[in-house]
Amino acid sequence: MYLRRTTRVVAAAAALLLAAAACTGGDENKPTAKVDGPPQLSALKTLGAGEGELDLVARAGYVENGSTDPKVNWVTPFEQASGCKVNVTVAQSSDQMLTLMRSGAYDAAAVSGDISGTMINDGVVAPVNTDLVPNYADVVDGLKAKPWNAVEDTPYGVPHGRGANLLMWRTDLVKPAPKSWDPVFTETTPHQGKITVHDSPMSIADAAVYLMTAQPDLGITDPYALDERQFTATVDLLKKQRANVSGYWNDYTAEVAAFKSGDAVIGSTWQSIASLAQTQKVPVQAAVPAEGTTGWSDTWMVAAKAKHPNCAYKWFDHVLTPKVNAQVAEWFGQAPSNRNACAQTTDKNFCTTFHATDEPYFDKVWYWRTPTKKCVDGRDVQCTDYAAWVKAWAEIKA
Image (cartoon, rainbow, N blue to C red; front, side, top):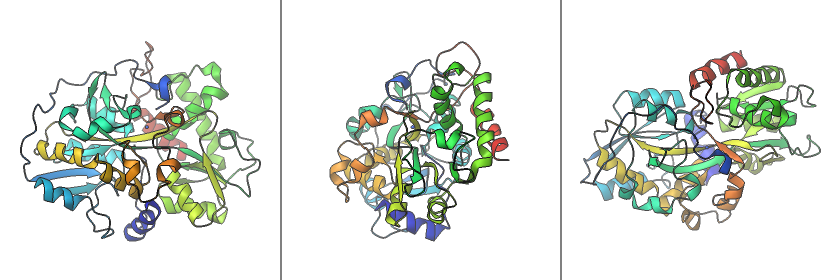
């Protein structure tokens, strides 16, 4: 279903920009130091009657009411059961989502890990009382109380799904099959001018993961905790890579088209894109390289000044029900967060393909989190923050 969704959404919306949402590196990426403390905000104590309205911000494909495909609709059943009319604004990027949520006009958002820390620390979102979200109990442990959705033991949302940023290659043109990020980052790569890279500041973390192994003397222990020396080395690597990049991708069809034509033969991708390419008979494979990778997990968060908090909580529980969580996962192309959702997918191999409950697989993934000046790895030095990453990314692509 996620393949059909991709084709229809792109055709209907002229290749919507699906900037990555948004993921951790297993045991070594558990919460360490508390980042700049958020303001003291209280979570909802008791669940009351719905306020009749719910204003959401989300990625395309997260809040479907049948308008994209009549068969894909988990909004109408919610509205009928809760009495909460859903209004959704589609955010085309994390920065746009942050701006929208700061406006105070929205109740909740499905937030990527690249900006979740900013929303928490700036008081844009409030803690979530998960006792009021019964289906939270069935969320996989690998997504609970993590650095991008909690502060110490306080949850700031409910996990919606997850995915890894993979290395994809043309099996007929890239031989032997790569097991490392080397062909993507090495200046002398045999695939010069044939590399694709995700167009996001978070791609800086991809390069940092590679350097953790390639240049251990840099001392990088967390790809989101880069001091000035480490950050400079990572940005320099990406600037050198620029000459070998055929394009920076934002939407599914652009990357698939590049691999189909041969303009690209290797680069970063998502499982949903690899699956779509394979469906179109493009000879590609995708995997997590030996060094590990980054990834994403989006979290539904409630606005600190939500006008309809009860409806927001009811929505959180609705999207975590096994049936709806499975629907969203297949439609968007991600691993569901509810461990019982796999029994509800229409494609019975879906959860195997997306490694839904495969924690050893996700142990190799550093989920996106917000870089801050206070190093998230606990070091008593100054690190680079997200604003610096955004500025550097623009320079890398220039």
